[in-house]
Length: 333
Ligand code: ASN
Ligand code: ZN
Ligand code: CA
Figure (tube, rainbow, N blue to C red):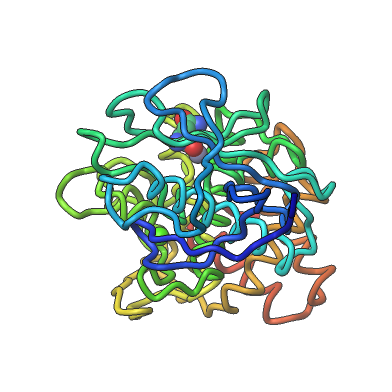
């Protein structure tokens, strides 16, 4: 029987109509991405263990844009995995989560009304719940990029998931999840510095997190303080997310893809942004060559400065911007 890599169509819930890389075997198509390490997408059909069933059908058009088709969440997840793979490959030259060319797998429709998504190093797999009332699957592109980036962190610096290193771990996922979303350049879900703006987890249209001013979520911290290691890692991520926004875009008011931002600085001094692409390179180099499992905010600062020095020189505007952006979130020398 014929077997080969195909280009299918995904009618997603959050990213409109997209192309999906699938595999044809005889008269059956499956969500198996032979161009990206063989990444497969499975339907748990509300189970909570094992893999369920690989998405398989006789047509290469997947989902209908709504929950009424089980394959819609599959299409979003398969697309998110592909864009995340391409982001890491084309931005950093990283080939998969372990940089060994091997894909992971995704599972959708986990449990019932499960309002979360998670990466698991044990199965080397990604799992998505269907959200409240099984209506809002957690399959948006920034969530996919966030979760799979936990796998990258585990396989590089290994930042411990508690204390200040835990906040840096979470921020790394928000930073690269945002990188994935901008990289996708999808007109239905354009890039922004918000996390989870599509999944409506709060039920009132607000995102989970804001990188320009993390405290807008009511819990995240804008700046470092002694004791920040004692708060939940999704809130102690705030200063690092804020640093990344400031380093990329600078302080003050700005509109990007129709979203308004206004990023304050703890020291009252302005920060001049260097652009998201350079900020991503600095963060990735620090994560993969400077940091360890116990890196804290002070170590994040020295690691990003070392990375910026290697990439752009210690007398560069980029190096100074890293200094200024850390000072703006109260991480000092
Ligand atoms: N969605 C959560 C996160 O990535 C899962 C977890 O608690 N680790 O932060
Ligand atoms: Zn996370
Ligand atoms: Ca976003």
